[in-house]
Structures are given as C-alpha cells and as structure tokens.
Amino acid sequence: MEIVLLTALTALGWKIIDLLKFLRAGDVNAAVTQVVTWAAGVGVVFLGSATDWAETFAVNGITLESLNGASKVLVGASLLSLGSVGFDFKKALDGSDSARTPSLISETPHHPAP
Image (tube, rainbow, N blue to C red; front, side, top):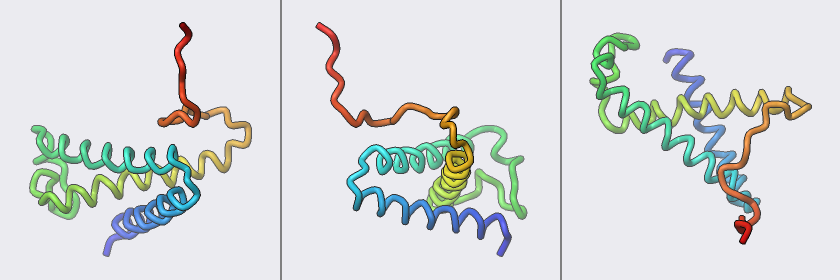
C-alpha cells in the first residue's frame, strides 16, 4: 500500500476520533466544521471527476473520473482530513494565533442591532 494512501487513511481515522471527542465535549462548532470539511472534500472530488481534466489526473494508472462513488467519498474525506491535520499542526505552532479564522458556527446567538 502506498505511503500516500496510508497517510490519508490515518488522517481520516484521526479526524473521526476528533469528531467523536468534539461531540462528547459538546463542541458544536468544531464538530460541524469537521463534517463540512469532509463534505467540501467529497464535493470537490465529485466536481473534479466531472471535468475535462479528470481523465488526465491519474494515480497508479487510476484516473479520477474512473473512481466509483465510494472511492470518491473516501478520497475527498481523506484529502480534507489531511488538510485538517495540517491545520491542527499550524495552530499548534502558531502560538500568537495570527492565522486565526472565524468560527463556522457562532458560539453565541447573533442579534442584529435594531
């Protein structure tokens, strides 16, 4: 098995465990963000597989367009899990929080000014 596949599957497993931890801790923002990240990855892979470039993008002779649906879901979720792991490392190294981004889900209800 290729190191890339092993790395991607490890990242996916890691983020599944993180999701379970977020849910147990009641961290709705982190849980929703992870699920949206996976959905974005799957969506990007399905979109990419429908483009004219899909037939030229091959890994070990398998093109993106030739993957079945389950494979596309696995690839999309795994790739964005790798991105999530990279983001985790960036957060750990960036003690100043200079690369902070806003939460996907507001922790407090937003009430517009009258």
